[in-house]
Length: 228
Image 1 (cartoon, rainbow, N blue to C red):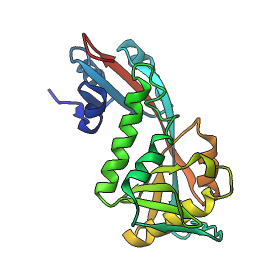
Image 2 (cartoon, helix red, strand yellow):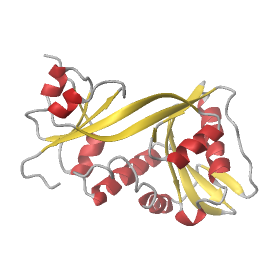
Image 3 (tube, rainbow, N blue to C red):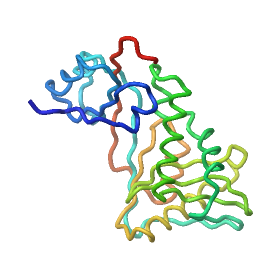
C-alpha cells in the first residue's frame, strides 16, 4: 500500500505531536489518517468537493492564493531612506517576527494554541536565517522588517507595527524581490497568500504578480492525551 503521509518535522517540534502532510485526496490516502495520532494538513483544488474530507474529520482552515511574477514584469518602487541587507542582528529579526504573524493559518486553527502557532513562525524565520534566506529591511538606518525566501518562492514578510501603513511596504518588498531575482538568477517569482489577507494580495498585485492558482487548506487532528 502506498504511503500518502509525508512527515513534517518542522511542525512537529512546535505542536508537541507528530505532524503530516497528506499527499492525495484519494480515499486510500485519507483512510491512512484514521488510526494515527497527530496533526494532518491537506491542500486541495478549491473546485473539488469537500465532502470526502469532512467525512474523514478534516476541517477547513484557509484558502491560499498563489500569485506569480514572470520575468520582466516586476515593478520596483523607490523611496529615500530604504535599504536591504544580509547583514543584521538576529535577535532583532526574531523580535519583529514575534509580532508579524497573528493571522497565519495555524492561528486560525482552533486546535492549536496561539503561543504554539507563534513558535511555529518564529522557528521558521530562525531556520531561514540559518540558511541565509532572510533579507533585513531598513528605513533611515533602522532595522524595521525582514523578507524570507527560498529559491523562487517569497515565503515571509514581517515589519514592525509602527512602520506599517507608511508607504514602506511597496519599496521594501520590491527591493527584496529584485535582489532575490538577481542573486538567484530566476525566471519567475511566486508566493502564497491567505485569501483573507487583502493588504498582501494588493501589495503583490502592485508589484506585478498575477494570480495563477489557489489551494484550500484543511487540517485534522487525532489525539488522546496530547497537550493541545
